[in-house]
Image (cartoon, rainbow, N blue to C red; front, side):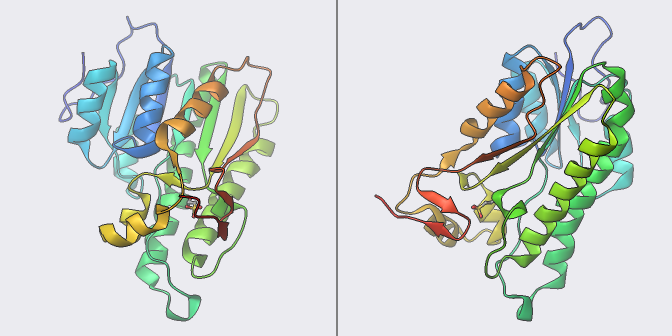
Length: 258
Ligand code: 8X3
């Protein structure tokens, strides 16, 4: 059963499955993670701006699809309505726009990256903290990036937003110490999704060139790791997991092997 996107409801009280919330769940890592967690027995609540896509995926995996724009406070408020007990929150919504030097930075691109990656993660996490605590064993997984750990030429809008998102998440690890909530930061390198297509504003050729000649990870590679994290016992907190393709040693250094 899936809920109508127009009138979303909470997972029904007769559904005994623990609830997992995934943002940015319409494609890529978010969609793959939703599938993985559903297969592990969660009722997954999928959020994304493209509600038709999350509704379709929710129907397939027995979850709930709801519209979510993490840059909009009212949208987040509506999204979390009725979610009183949540076991897993995967902060996946975010992304990059542009690859410009600071000297010619596009301020609108910067604002979008900070709004989605940083303030978006803050909004959703803040709204769901009581529900995560109420579960008695909550888990917050935040998908940052290796860009949260290093800087690279022309990437400051994205790397600064990812650093800030990472620090937000790591600060919560301290602030929630003593509460029944675990926190895991997942920092992937190159994953072939629509990440580069969004970054380059739909320029498929430029997006394809990023991964040409090397073997990037795919969304399922990351989702499997999130599934592993979510299936650890309550006393085990995996703090930070960095995943890169074999062909990538850092955000600035990869090798074309093929
Ligand atoms: C993106 C990581 O290595 O593709 O978050 O720039 S990388």
